[in-house]
Image 1 (spheres, helix red, strand yellow):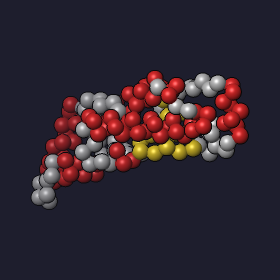
Image 2: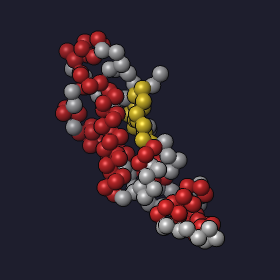
Image 3: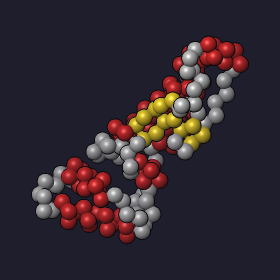
Length: 152
C-alpha cells in the first residue's frame, strides 16, 4: 500500500490471501493523503526563503485571526507571508505519526475481511485526529481535504 510518500508493506498470512482474492478489490493498491495545498508545508514545515500561497494565507488571516476589515486583510496577509519568508515555519507532523500508529497496530485489523482500503481509512482517520488534537487546522481546509482511493 502506498500512502502519499510513505511505503507500508503489509505481511498477509497465506491462508487469508485466498479469502481476499475471492473478494473484489480487497488487495487493490490504495493511495491515501491530503489534497490541501499546504498539507506538505504543515507536515514538514517551510524553510526560510519560501513563499506560501497568498490565497491560503489570506484565508487563514480571515478565519483564524478573524480579520474582517477589508483594508487590513492584505496588510496582515503580507506581513504573515513576509514572516514565513524570513523565518520559515516549524514542522507539525500529523501524517507520519498516523502511519506509524496504524503500522504498530496492524495485527488488530482483520485485513482478510476488511482489505487494504480499511487500512488507508485508518491512517487518514488517525491523521485527522492528530490534526484536531494538535490544533493544526484552524480553517478545517486541511482536515477536510483527506482522501482514500483505490489506484486504477
